[in-house]
Amino acid sequence: MRTNAATVSLWTDTAQVPVHPPLEGDTTADVCVVGGGIAGLTAAYLLAREGRSVVLVEALQVGAGETGRTTAHFFPPDERYFEIARRFGDAKARLLRDSYERATDLVESIVQAESIQCDFLRLDGYLVPAESGGADVVDREHACVQKLGIAATRLLRVPGLEWDTGPALCFHRQAQFHPVKYLAGLTRAVKRLGGRIHGDTRARDVKGTDVVTEKGTVHAQAVVVATNTPFNNRFVMHTKVAPYHSYVVGLKVPRGALKPFLLWDTGDPYYYVRLDAQQEERAYDILVVGGQDHKTGQEGAPQHRWDEIEAWTRRRFPQAQEVAYRWSGEVMEPSDGVAYLGRNPTDRANVYVITGDSGNGMTHCTAGAMLITDLIMGRANPWVSLYDPGRSPLHGLTDFAMEQANVLAQYTDWLQGGEVSAPDRIPPGEGALIRDGLKLMAVHRAEDGKLTFLSAACPHMGCAVHWNSAEKSWDCPCHGSRFDIAGQVLHGPSNAPLAPAGPT
Ligand SMILES: Cc1cc2nc3c(=O)[nH]c(=O)nc-3n(C[C@H](O)[C@H](O)[C@H](O)COP(=O)(O)OP(=O)(O)OC[C@H]3O[C@@H](n4cnc5c(N)ncnc54)[C@H](O)[C@@H]3O)c2cc1C
Ligand code: FES
Picture 1 (cartoon, rainbow, N blue to C red):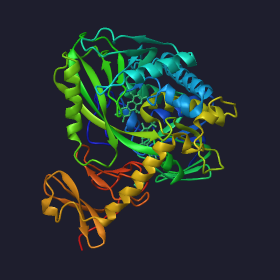
Picture 2 (cartoon, rainbow, N blue to C red; picture 1 turned 120 degrees about the horizontal axis):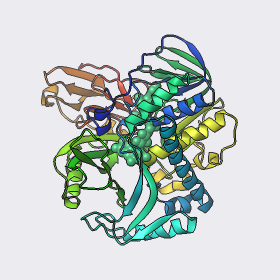
Picture 3 (tube, rainbow, N blue to C red; picture 1 turned 90 degrees about the vertical axis):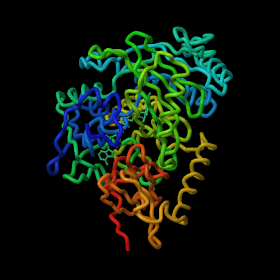
Picture 4 (cartoon, rainbow, N blue to C red; picture 1 turned 180 degrees about the vertical axis):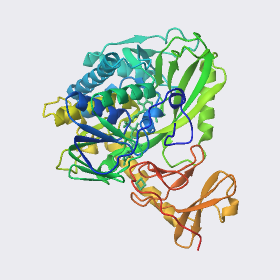
């Protein structure tokens, strides 16, 4: 399955979503959904179930984005309840909890109603201290969830593991599933309900509630932009959301050696663990461990991060055998820890966005689809103000200021020399920046020696892209756009390719 990066995840390796043909010319619909990940497909499903005619356009194919690269834990906010309560107050922290519970319940009910075989499982999830400490964080979270009335049990260690995790906070009835099998099931359901899905159809612009794609225009009454990061909002949303890359390793473990569980630690960035144990056809289970996040586009050779995760895992799980998967993906971090779900703040028309999902995209995207369905159907929804994309970013002032300073610093790349002096210094299969007078060129050397010269200027807001040797892509360090070696967009917010360039 073709995805937005070079590595293959456990999920895209073990499930298929049907390929959808491109849009052919103009069409009409009540709602146009842009993006075929969990956010877009859930919105399309809920709206089609309400009797709305829906057209979904997807630049690549369903599941090619971050939903195919996730680890699909349904768990409490990774920013933690005590931080959410401090920033937004107890009442909003409880609303957030309600939205998480209702989103997880909705996924479970869709799985049942649509008979989706996606290994959905309810299970316990544990917050544990990081290697460097964090028992106090576990205690603060415990005190906060007790105050908020959230069911969680403090334990001396996670039961059933050889590794002594130290004090753990157990959240009951969390969940996991196989995200690509879920998308495949949602796709079937949307089509059964009359929804139309088009792959290889990139939306280029949103004019009022018309979605202009490269293959025709969808004239709609409402638009849901579910592209992980909105391409239609050039500036405002991108000051509130920061792109991070996260790394995942899947290691074989003997069948039945571990019971399914979710676990994440108090580190920043944190490690997160789950088990994929429901595949009858496999002779082993896969222990899936993620972490080692860093800002997208700000590390050229990140392969060592997979090694770090593997070493971390082997120190804790003696059951771990050989590595079966290594992949990475992009996570959009909101500056205040709460996703942005609702009306696009720069639009008067019926245009909605789902972004800033953080490491809680399964729940945030599902909650976003529920909220936006209510708004489109003209119903009240209790989460509107909590998740309002137009809210001030100052709830998370320190993180907001830090991220703005980080973005500004990236523009100094234009004052630097290139990374190599000439194309022959680039190893086969790699890329590097080369200065040519006032220009910075992004140059790739293929295994057969063929050179591709592109402008390094990201079409979104002009930062210089950097080579990502792990995913063989050009990644923008400012707002997380990513491009393939031919310059085509893999991930927004840029909606235009890197321009061709040539040595002068
Ligand atoms: C390594 C990793 C681990 C994670 N772990 C977890 C976890 O354990 N639990 C959790 O809840 N979340 C987790 N997340 C986050 C979660 O995976 C994401 O938040 C979620 O999948 C985002 O879904 P989405 O539908 O918004 O985006 P995507 O799945 O990226 O879908 C967006 C789609 O829009 C398409 N698109 C983009 N631009 C256009 C355009 N202009 N026109 C048409 N189509 C377009 C893209 O091709 C893409 O298919 C993780 C993420 C990563 C990367
Ligand atoms: S993504 Fe904004 S400048 Fe590149």
